[in-house]
Length: 143
Length: 429
Image 1 (cartoon, rainbow over the protein chains, first blue to last red):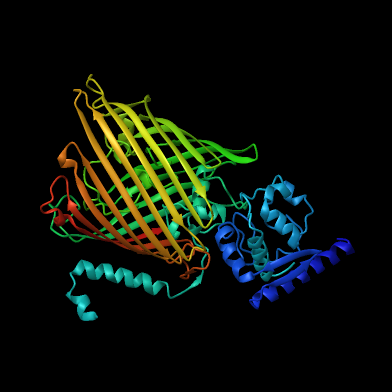
Image 2: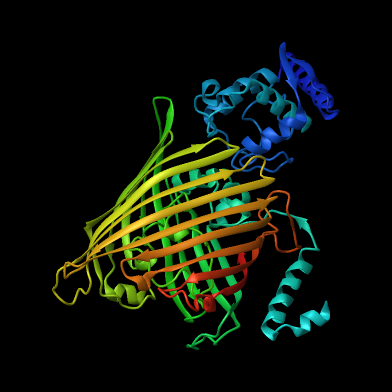
């Protein structure tokens, strides 16, 4: 892994951890990750969005893969690289780093970002809900 | 409290002792990993696919899994596609019944059923289940329901479409919405009591496990459709499979089952509305040359699920079937069935369900009407459940039903004599 990639992931993770800390304090605020402004992400509301939309296929617990992988420690990670889970070839080869912007784009329309994704999800159209759920996922630990 | 317990009839005390044992077991806890083979295959919890964390009522995720041919997986190998279940119960009716073999006049404590299942994915496109069941009342073993599917998902103009075929031995076993007879409410009832009465539509379970059929199906966007046909197994094969010999004959191609539905999954809620039907010509006795009985069943059905964050889940299901029979002597009769039920589950664990059932027709003796209340407790089968040490392979439901009859097989006077209390423990693994 080259230095710029490591630095990028570190900055991304740090920004999202800061976002998580802010949200954990039940404060809706702004956080910036890789130049993307994550507007008003509220982790507490995001947990509800997660349970309603994601929880059947994804767990928030570390190491608990379901039909989809555990989202613990997902932010800042490179897509499709987690050991022990079988991703689609397209996602594994995408090189996408899960920063807030890419997460938002993916959650809005998974197959627009990764056409061969196995994730059977029509997308989360509401930008505020995407911001909230990303804030929640960030509380689960950054890569 | 103990005085109250000892004033109860002995079977009640034994049943309550069983409940106490279950409650005691749950005080020894470990994290849940808990569930039968489909759950192990997908890595998902029972609660992901089933309302109230226990089958058979499906959530939208469960419907997608079924329509997808039972093939979804978490990608991990080494899963054994075998499951089992056992149901034990205590049944008390308001008035004694005529005793029969293995059935007392009242207060029956029974092992209702024990079953083994093959249930799992075979290839990327093929999956299914097959049941071998032990009937604790008849004390016999038989092949139960089977449903094997081939399904393929394709992208059509940017929308997902799934095409599949179900090969099964019970009309309506392929139902993903829990409104047709095989999987509809009540999902469980006493095998030694009265149920919804003796009369049932042809699309009901009258042919269950005595036929083999192929049903093609497709879902595209919000539309879902099925079309298929069934044929009777030979009497000798029925007998070999544990069902005895039935000489009625339904010929493949002489009948058509169909269904069309609109379904919408909004994540926090979901609903469907649909129509279905079955037209069939049946030889009442294949050993005698005679004209056929002709059945025309037409039904409407709908379901609604308020899912939210799964803390509070509310469901409403209903179906209405109108059947017209033109018999071999060209006489016509009708039968109408109505089934409605609503349920509420708290934390996917504590449930209360209320159902209304009504059957009526041109033959007044067919008329049965009543309500059923069920309270149940499902402690496992969800991600954050605490499972007793050594029971992480299991899921459990304990429930109490009360059946109230206002009319039974055409008679209102004395219908309440059939009122039934049914206490059950349902274990799956």
